[in-house]
Length: 334
Image (cartoon, rainbow, N blue to C red; front, side, top):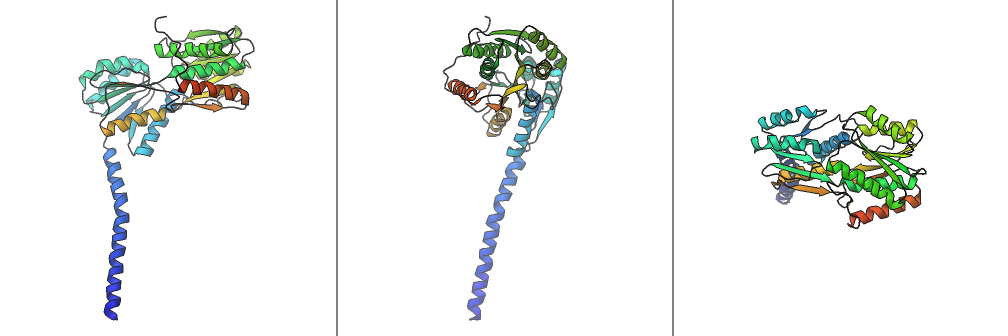
């Protein structure tokens, strides 16, 4: 009897040890994977501050998502001026970083110049769709799709039939966004006119307010801006003059409640996670990648100023964009 009890006890101990070992092995395996991932040296170079409630804030959110979901530590440097782009890229190349993100098309020229000197560092330019062998890639948001939806919303909410659209620089991606805004508005009502202006800045908030104010004084009753922080100035102008604005890039409805009709939101974190996964998988190539509504990189934040009927019509437009039924109205050089 005693022998049977001892055998049973030993068997129980063995089973418990196996259970414990089995349970313990999974966290150890996960930790090893995460520790391995953290060996990557990745930096995000930003043209503005992470608290800009727009372009740079969404990029910082992407950095946080990569750290949380993938266990990969990313560094960042903010408010880097254009004159310092090349020096900044060169610095991280010298430090043998695996991946350097330049957050904006304005970084492309610097990448083209510096990348050949550091073949072991991959330079990924956000909002570029240009791949340059061996180590420059681009991943772009189809911004024109966002601009088209913004124009649809503005077109539904104008009474003066005059709209204002502000761009940063006349880069093709920005020109395309403003042209699509105009096309979206005119699809609602062909008699609508759109005033388009470029301010040659990403961060001059006062210039945004000044430019939008001039548009409003000329009759525009809804304004839109694709120029990073400049957009905050345009929203302020709309608020001051009791007209409306369409938020863009980040959720901006709370920037001026009652003024912002709705926001077209970039799911920028998905872009960063997409690229970093390719780095980890060893599949990162010098290619241009384009994503938009269909890939879940663009989204909406509504306000109660948008009626159910308007919302339904906007969602129909988004569905058509996803299905490729609406063409990009922008033709470079025209």
